[in-house]
Length: 315
Image (cartoon, rainbow, N blue to C red; front, side, top):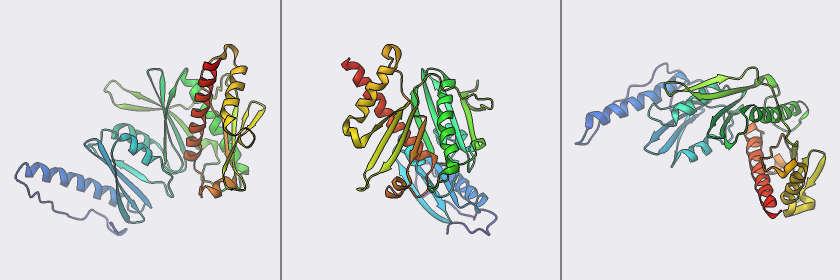
């Protein structure tokens, strides 16, 4: 165990720099980093899961402590770090970023705002796109960049999606840690203030305006061979992969284009998604998290948009 639960202060550790060039600077840097890590662990020693994130040049490292056992994982770039932070968790990890981490400002703002057991949604507008960040009830991070026509429509689309999955949890018998109470969902706007620092602004009076988008629902199941089977309901018409096979997304794309006046190519968004208990069991999803749903939603939306673009080019 790296730190005893009975220890009230960080242990004393002396650092020596056995080199000719800049020994004092190296010693000071290592001592500062070491003390920061140890103090963080001691302050949070009663937590089941801790996560300390630091940066070395363009790469990143995560020092994890779970039930007193430490591990160190390295990531080559920021994209790999985001992917690592998006993995599912058994317990909500208390997270800290080192002072030298360039990614620390944004991610620190997100994780310091989020809370265990809650879903926190963040949006930042830039150059016609929206950066979407969600920290779910177990501290897993979801990230997506997507075209943004209007902020309120993006908020409304995700609000509708969250409302549907949270309302359904009241009657869902599958294992899940997704909150059942809609009040445990918070929305925030990310902005840079005059000093260039990131401000997190609560969106308390948000109205869920889904606009004129065609409602799209997805149901994911497994067949007798444990293969994934997807059914997609577009408005009131069902499309099943078991019947359409590889033509599923092409057929849906044609249907959506036909329903849109002027055949606009704006994105299609899923506003409801459900995994069957059988699918969760066969794909080893022991406790369904919001991040599982969001990643699947993102994947299906990408395939639908690509199919719509390809079909529009044929016409």
